[in-house]
Length: 247
Ligand code: ATP
Image (cartoon, rainbow, N blue to C red; front, side, top):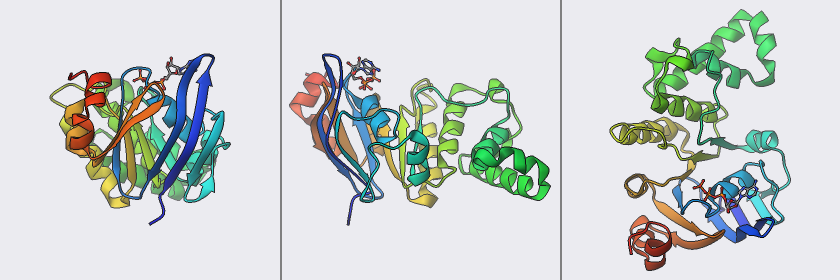
């Protein structure tokens, strides 16, 4: 089967720093892939290039065979790649449902306010999405009143609005308490399942990586150090030395 995403010889430099060094990677549909690497290894640079937030210096990024390497973030999102951020990008003064309604409406927000039936349909879709994350009872609470873990989940729900082919999550459990981290990931996996989306998540917590990823890609100084099954990558000597600090 053709990969959903195919990245070939992707390069990005910031002055003397090589943040992406000939990155080559194929991602087939339905995989849950974790990107690991020490601070500064190049994980976010990779995510930013794939989602249109950074232009690569060279190399190609194909989504279902289409070259998206020069497209804007908005265009990439329309074509089927959604992302969440390390810090949730939410309107804190609006409620959870209102945030999702804004995302569902896209640029048609103002129109929807004049068309009650349409607005109700969008609200129903927002509540349905919250339900998938087990958050329906928080629909009418302002984001400012909600805990960090819940905000993360709502940010991920925002990314699901477009039913993406590929979902990129930047540290879904950072800022989430140790007690909440597995529940948070369980809810993410459960919520994404109906769309059978392909998930790439950046993660520093190896317990989360080994429990939820079916493939791990380890980055080091802008390069891919290892790529394979979690048990193999996490036991790789170089990965243990440069990434997880186990040697
Ligand atoms: P972290 O786990 O801390 O988020 P990371 O693996 O995501 O790290 P990147 O943020 O991709 O790493 O950074 C890769 C390298 O590129 C680092 O050396 C970083 O300092 C550098 N870098 C990233 N963005 C920029 C930028 N906008 N300007 C200059 N240097 C940058």
